[in-house]
Length: 328
Image (cartoon, rainbow, N blue to C red; front, side):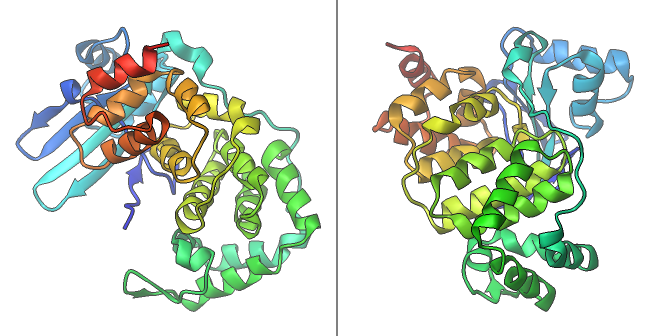
């Protein structure tokens, strides 16, 4: 079962990142990992955070916010999860100030009112705020399962699924496309991502979902959830070339919460290896820090992606992968 993690800023998101050299054991139970550093050191990051907010450490949720809003990092995120009762992992992916050009959020036109054609979905989401979380399971969102990992899917979630299935027309597709690409309303983009689950047979659905991940607000969370569900529940080969710009932005750290979900989706949909290698070069340190992390969550996604792109498993040796990524 894929873990849903408690994150600092964006709800409903998966977070990940770290490098083994940056792992720190605190009090024998908490491990802090810092990912994506190029010229900064861990000590520089700690000193900068303390300068703006004395008493705040890398283990505090506020750390990522301080790095972004005060220190000037192009992006930063924080994730906390527990492995049994013994270890708590805190993973901090970052994009340094000097690499700001890698982070490219989407800009949108003026906010639009809620899409009238989706009024039934909006009503269900407002009445049953927790119903959407059950759609993260592919067998629930894409199939007819009434349970997931032994837990029953409540009736509001099944009702939401039934409502979504009625929005599978070409008009729904066009509304979803326009919302993802143009609408500043995160509510419309949230429902648009859910509606796109009806169009798993279109490569453009995958392209739109990764565009949706470039949102700066919580609307990106639904796009992440649907992308993950489609790639796990209905994997097939996708031509990712039309989505290159969005993918470059994501590999550059535009949405650090969705980083490993993107890696998993690209591997599952058999991204063209040449394109995959070029994307790995956008910020190789960030990718290889995922691979070399000590935590149990992030390395499998990075390795799965690299093995697909390389066509051969070079193991967990980040030096070997670094040489290959940078090579001719």
